[in-house]
Amino acid sequence: MATSLTAQTPKANLIKEWERARAYTKEYLEAMPETGYALKPTKEMRSFAGQMLHLSDAIYMIVGTATDVAPTVKDLEKSNDVAKVSVTDKVLAAYDFAINAIKNVPDAKLAESVKLFGRFELTKGQAMDKAFEHQTHHRGQATVYIRLAGATPPQEKLF
Image (cartoon, rainbow, N blue to C red; front, side, top):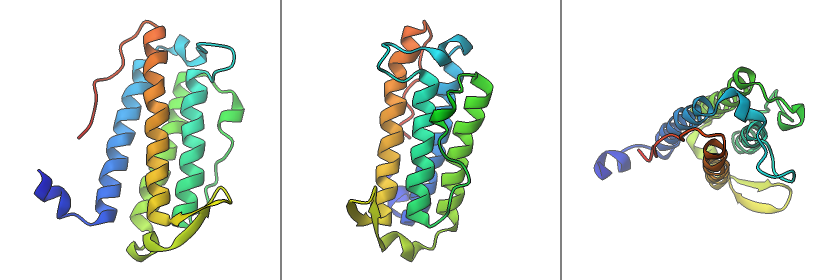
């Protein structure tokens, strides 16, 4: 297994991981009942839909910055959308944006420097790693929301 993973290019690995993350997030979106999309464990927290739209906003912003592809979508979280079908469509579209942007970025670009959030200097490849870490973090938080809604979250999808 390790041999086949290391034989791939960094970009091929990125694409593979983002495709896995998309499939895994889709399972989360499907596991949450329609009524759970508006669920907020406390008034200070985001709703389940808000979590998913927030991670989508970050995907567009960070991956767009790292690949020099300007997203045409922004501020999804501010829409306050809590409808399962439309939130699911918006979230999966963000993953599609990331996957397509990565497919089209030249390998050499991933070594270029970028300033993220106007203050963090890193390579575009490192920015991609941060985008991936961010979506993983918020998807992980969604596990608790699904349990609070009385549903069962998906099994781990590490590979």
